[in-house]
Image 1 (cartoon, rainbow, N blue to C red):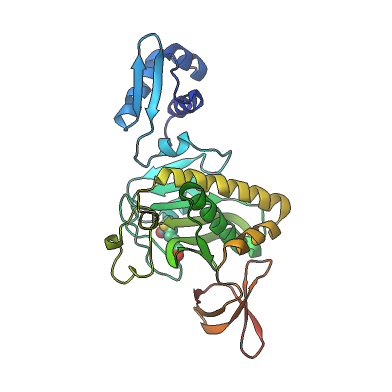
Image 2: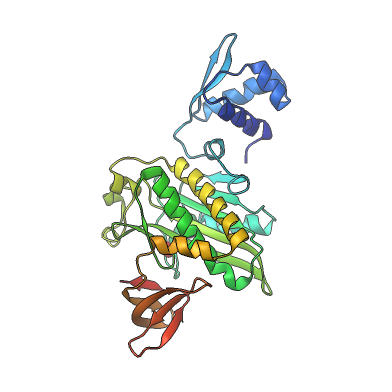
Length: 325
Ligand code: BTN
């Protein structure tokens, strides 16, 4: 995270909504010297922000830059906790790994780690997650919810709904959820979610929610083996999508849904999840680490576990699987 003066400056520009603010007013509001203001504005410019300076009027932020950065994310954030501490890296092995280190060092609930590239991105079921530079959103949130360990899968479902709402808000595309946590557009995967826990006895220390969204890849950016099953927002929309905006909306919906979850429990989240789910009521094949099961997907229970009715009438609970419809 950058300095407090820089964040206060960005807040002031945000509130000014494109209008000029004098250097004196900025210095007064922020509580620093005018020289400090000037110095921080020069740094913002170096980082790609377009700041206009006009004599007797002051400064005005013309446009945010197009780069993914802590400042850009912070500038349009509409949340109180989620994403308020944000750390951006040009390249990391995996944001999950970095987030775990931050969590172990006491990072706040809502801390967000974002990278422009992951060299060892990880997916579910010990798979790799291809995370090339400058194209997608590779992000991990540190959550510290006061919930029981067995309820943790509910957070994955909650996150899936947050991703759907964020994508819908920014692009007008309505994605679908394939249990437990694949987000699809036109049947192809646009986002994956990986939830990892740190717990002691049955208390959750932290939950790390990793989200990978394919945003600006073209078809040829996907390797041959996933071209038929993966998509990106750009492919679907036929135009480049602003990653920062998606991240900000994701923070917003995560916070809204977490508040709803804390005040009213899982039922309203479950209802929202079911609105966007495609696998329920269908004949499916579930490939788990313990074997393959076929049957009718009845729905999810209050723990977020999938209930599968097999041909012999037996109903089994599926905790984690790859689903084929
Ligand atoms: C899946 O298999 O569908 C889950 C993919 C999760 C990928 C994200 S990208 C950000 C975070 N860091 C990782 O290494 N993985 C998750």
